Length: 209
Image (cartoon, rainbow, N blue to C red):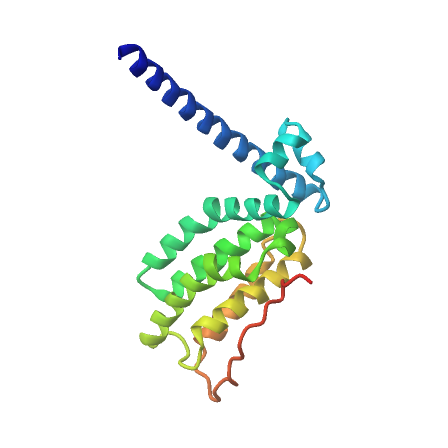
C-alpha cells in the first residue's frame, strides 16, 4: 500500500510539474508572438516558434492556427494590462475619472501592440472593455455627470472602436491618442443643447467572410 501511495504521490508531482512547464512554455510563446508581431505584423508561426526557442510543432500543439495564437496574445494583453485598470476604474468614486482610466489603459495597450489590432473581434472588445465601461458611464448618467442622451451599451462600444482607429495613424508607441481621448471625454461631459440622434444597433466591423 505504501508503494502504491508513493507512486500516486510521485505521479501527482510529475503531472503538476508538467502543467507548470506547459503554462510556462505557453507564456513564452505568447510573449515571443507579441514581440514578433510588433516588429512584423505578418510574422509566421515558424518565425514566432524560432523567437520563442521552440520547434514550430510545439507552437502548433498549443495553438492549432495562427488565429488561435493571435487571440491568445490579445487575451494575454488584456489580463496583463487591461483587467487591473478596469478594476481600478470600476472602484473609482468619480465615474468621469473611471472612464478616463479605462480608455487610457485600452489605448496605451493598443499603442504598444498595434500589430494585433486587426485581429481583435467585436466580441472580445465588448466583453473585455465595452461592457464594464458602459456600466461606469451609466453610473455617471445617473449622477448627472454625463449627458443624459448617451446610450451606454452602444455608444461605449463605438467610442472605443473610434479611438482604436486612431492608433494605427500614429507613430509606434506614441501617446498622440491622448488628444482624441480628451476630445471624446469632453463630448461626454458637454451640456448638449440638442439631443443626439438615435443610436443604431452595432454591426460587426471585424466579421470575416
